[in-house]
Length: 252
Ligand SMILES: NC(=O)c1ccc[n+]([C@@H]2O[C@H](COP(=O)([O-])OP(=O)(O)OC[C@H]3O[C@@H](n4cnc5c(N)ncnc54)[C@H](OP(=O)(O)O)[C@@H]3O)[C@@H](O)[C@H]2O)c1
View (cartoon, rainbow, N blue to C red):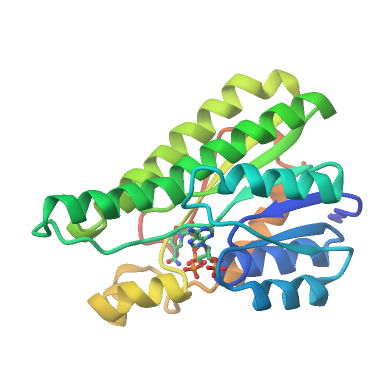
């Protein structure tokens, strides 16, 4: 089976590091032109775009603001003309103690929702309109095991935002399939990135390792090939589904 993504333009949010970076690399290896989105890490994103080639480019936007997602979509469509696949990967996991002051706790909650859920929703809204015009497209949302299993008390907002991404993406798959739009969910478990490191600094690496069925923590490169496969169209009849990549830590 050959996967050839030549002439496919793919927007990967949060591609400056971690899972998004590995996804961008894998997509480009299959021939895609990638819009490498970043927030703070501009240099890394620009270097990555140059390294992976195929006309890939870096685009900056803060997805924690109301107009960030809209500006990102406009920049990418202006530069590339069309987008074939949207990958909602950018995310934050903020540890927020339930004992915190209510206003501070709500601030953490709000920021988590803005980046993980609101920005995803707005980008999906723009993508749906665009895909309808061009006869179809694919959306892949990087949710989390936390959406299904739940998370610790410090990460309630994170789990809730990831659950929202699942319901949103499933609804899009059901609502727009007849217009050629397919939508998928990836639910990773612990994956060795800066985000997981923050969690492991808090709870210890053994917490993560004891949780999984395999003897090695998942790396970003273990997630990326599944996204290439979904982006290719070879799995379109699985639209609406979730693929767990959690090293057997939560099987449901
Ligand atoms: N790692 C895990 O264990 C794990 C498990 C389950 C699910 N996931 C999910 O997988 C996705 C990627 O996670 P990761 O571990 O690769 O995270 P990461 O290493 O912390 O990288 C986060 C990415 O999101 C971008 N980002 C953060 N805040 C942003 C904002 N306000 N606006 C725009 N972009 C922003 C960052 O951009 P800059 O660096 O440019 O600022 C970066 O590219 C997330 O949705 C996460 O929830 C991760």
